[in-house]
Amino acid sequence: MNIFLIPYTPLRHASVAVVCATLCLLGWWVVLTLSWFGAPWNQDWDGPIFLGTLAALAGGGSVLAEGALRRWPIWKRAATVAMAGALSVSFTLGGYWLWTGAICPAFGELAKDASLVSLRYRLMCWLAAGFGASVGPMLVRRFKGGVSHLFGGILAGLVGAVVWYVAGDPLWPIGKDLFLASAFGATSFGFTFGLFTWGVPEELYTGWLRVLTVTRHARRIPVNASDGQPRERFVGHFPRGLDLFLPASDAVMELHVSVLLNRRGEFRARGLTLQPTTVRRFLERVDLSYDRTRAAPLDTRLSSGDRLVLGPKGRETVVEFIMLPREER
Image (cartoon, rainbow, N blue to C red; front, side, top):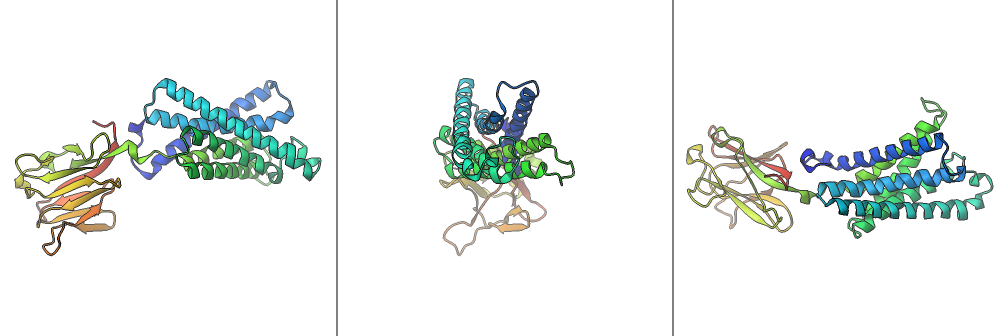
C-alpha cells in the first residue's frame, strides 16, 4: 500500500478491499495446504480454524493497510496488526463455539455434524467471523468508525456465507466443488470487509492548484498547509504577495479568484473580480463573476478535477483543482 499509487477517485476505497481479499485467499490456501498434508487438528476444528484465519487476516489486513498508508513505524505496524488479529480470532472463536456448542444442539444431532454444508446452520458461524473481524480493528482504532466496522463485518460474514453456499451447490456451473466454494467465500468475505469497514481517508490528501495554460503550464501550489489547517490561496497578477501569480497579459486581474479550505474541511472557490470567472465540471458550469448587488463574493465547493476558467472568451487562463497525497512536494 502506497499513497502515491492510489489516485483520488471513488475507486481508492477498493484498494483496502483488494488487500483484505488477497490475504483471505492466501489464508484459505494455507489452511487447505495444511489439511492436505495432515493438519494437527481433528475435523471438529476445521470450521473455527478456517473462519478464525479469515477474521484475523481481514481485520489485521485492514490495520496493516492503514499503517502503510500513514507511514507508521514498523514496530507500531507489527503491534497493531498482531493485536487486531488476536482480538479478531478471539471474538470469532467465542461466537463460533457459542453457536455450535450451546445453540445448535437444540436443532438435533444433524446440526452438530462438523461436515454439514448448510446455510441454515452455518450462517451464524460466518456472521461470528465477520463480527470478530470487525471488533479487532475497531478496538485498535479506539472505536473510530465503530458503526461502519460492525456493519461491514456483519455484511462480510453474510456475503461470504452466501457465496460459499451458492458456489458449492450442485446446480452451480462448476458443480459441487467445496474447495473452490470456500475459496470464493473467503475472497468475497475479505473484499466485502475491506470495502465497507475502512477506506482511504480524506485526510491523507490535500488540494492543489495547477495551471494548464501554456504561459505557466504545470505551475502548481498546495491550497492548505501540511498540518491541514484552514488556509486561502489567491490567484491574480498583483506584483507582490500573491500565492499563484499569472501574467496580466493572460487577462487575469490583480485579484481574480481565491481557493480556500474552510473549517468544515471543504475546498471552495470565490470570484473576486467583475471579469469572467467560471468553474467547469462534468455537466455543470458555475459563474463566479463578482455581483455588485451582493455583499459578498460568490463561491462554490470544489471537487478534484474541477477547472477554473479566468478571463474572457478567447483569452482564457485555465487553472485545475486536483487532490494529491499530502506527502506530495
